[in-house]
Image (cartoon, rainbow over all chains, first blue to last red; front, side, top):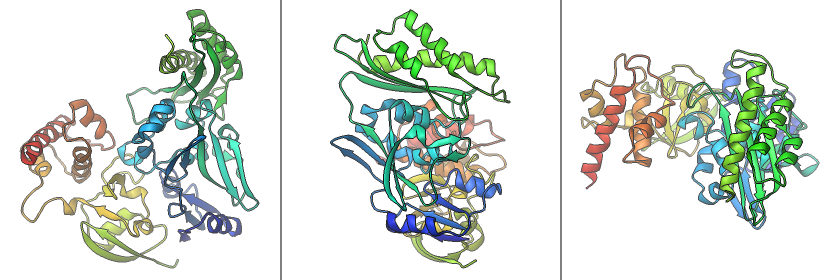
Amino acid sequence: MRYIRPQSMEDAVGLLAGAAGPAAILAGGSDLLVRMKGGFVEPELIVDIKAIDGLSEIRETADGFSIGAAVPCAVLGEHAALKKAWPGVVEAAKLIGSKQVQGRCTIVGNLCNASPAADSVPALVAAGARAVIAGPSGKRTIPVEAVPTGPGRTSLAKGEIIEAILLDKRAPHAGDAYQRFIPRTEMDIAVVSAGVNLTLDDAGVIKSARVAVGAAAPTVLLVEEAAQVLIGSKLDEATLERLAKVCAGACRPIDDKRGTIEFRRKVAGVLAKRVAATAYERAGGK
Amino acid sequence: MAGVAVSTTINGDHVEYLCQPDETLLDVLRDRLGLTGAKEGCGTGDCGACSVIVDDRLVCSCLVLGAEAEGRQIETIEGMAHGDQLHPLQQKFLEHAALQCGICTPGFLIAAKDLLAKNPDPTEEEIRFGLAGNLCRCTGYDKIVRAVQDAANVMKEGSR
């Protein structure tokens, strides 16, 4: 096995594209090293991307935020402007693991690990986040929901690296939120989860909405029908009930030791209601 | 496998070592450098017994490669006391009997040190959340929480 820490994205892409055997990208390592230890992956090459310029920074631009692929989740929680603009994304990222894991884990790693139960992914999907991908044939930007294609699988081609996650600049009267169900208070994997992102008009009527449900299908679900339920409402009780019903109906969950299909469907609806209410309040709605 | 040459700083001392590319920082500390304070409990980042501080971030050294330590500042339990002078957290863990078998203790002390550096006056809830990445199968945690609270009080007095 080889460990290489390239200084440029060009070199990193070249190394990955040219690797003869299995290759792995290392940022925080909180998934990779566990998988190596368990014998689930045996990379011939590890490319540590932390020395690449700009990848360890959160940049605030005219268009919003660019979060580098090597930024640990703990740093997201310490970034006042990001927390203010995208509290749902930050609270989701902060739910991953312990303090020790927070110091290492990244949202890009969470996305590329492609677990259906990833905490930051539903929040990113609800937020309309985009992934900037560098690869052998140049750069491309895709919605985050287009990255995972199934448990442990992504749409990234050989040699491609996600270098940053983009979040838009916030319009006025906007808010997002994320919650998951776990049988304890923290340090667990979501049984089911929901993320909601809303924009209101001056009167508090929902203008735009994105609703995502996690751990309820092979990949995170963007529930378009749920967004249509919310748009035009002021989040009255009848709307919330319809939201719950649509989200429960959109789920395609599995039965496992952490929850049954029936339980996951029910809780997806309950969480969607709660999260929508929090997002609405954060957007300034009453 | 070719070794990786690493130059780093551990507890303020400049250290150089050769390690295998897939060797964890925990294994380097314990097996190459003789710093056996950090323990391997799970090896998968769940128990916190291998906690160290890398560039002011609390991490599990079992989830860091030895090769990644290049150019970093690492703090381990071995750097916590100054000679015979115990750190207030170490003193209070003794006074409150906040340990039984002791395997988890170095990790708890490092995690508590990091917690108090960032939040010198934590509530009980903040201590419990802050130390949730460290597992202890003996004490039931209450004595650990009380020791950290007591140490926080002593450290606040000392800084006045």
